[in-house]
Image (tube, rainbow, N blue to C red; front, side):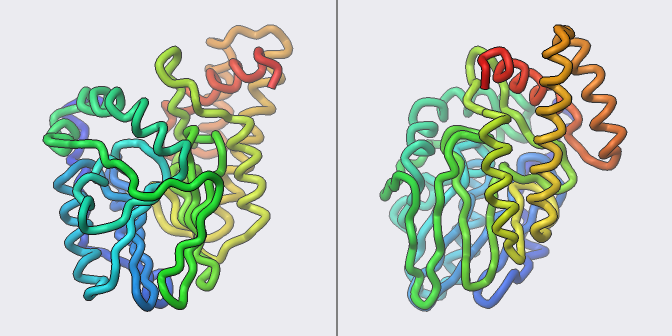
Length: 299
């Protein structure tokens, strides 16, 4: 996206929405690089899900969460390490306990600095949001799953394994039937494949599809995607079905020794015809590239 077209990725508190008892979402207002942010309460503690892009957004989120908590203990988690989700975590240091899965912690440590520089190149508004950014260090790290007791409400943090990134996790609130997915799911947008060989090739279309099959089978009442409107289990089915079609159509063409360039042209036309209203058409090509590589590797 050209620099002059990139809007300021600012967290907006004007339309906070209640999802269930003692649980709200600060919604993505349709602005790129602004995530849906969750605030989940229990009797003695409150969990914040995502920070927004950089320190100033995180200050906004922290102030809102502290006011919402009204003296309750604060926790923070992030669904994956990408900048708009996790690059405000340092702002919460000393105010909230930051807990994530081990693979995400490694992503932050190994790939975080490179992503700071890459995202600064997206335009002046993004670079301004990243001014003074320091990558947060988790206080608690878990391996595969962690149950966080907020007091009368247990929130389940589950590492999904490699999919959109190596360290993806979902955040489930079982008593309310609410699932926060991060960028495993977007509403009204083609799946974001951060396929940037040779620098970052951790995204896996095949493993992402397997994750989406499992999540769709669980049929939560409310699904909070990484970006886009809050929905229901149909969002999970939509992403599952898209990834399956993308894989099948890509691999069928790869089997016929078609060039990747031709595959991209044909698959892009097919997917846009099927979902003309979806944003992020540039991610179709990245998805094809990822799946071609997985096909050639025998996945």
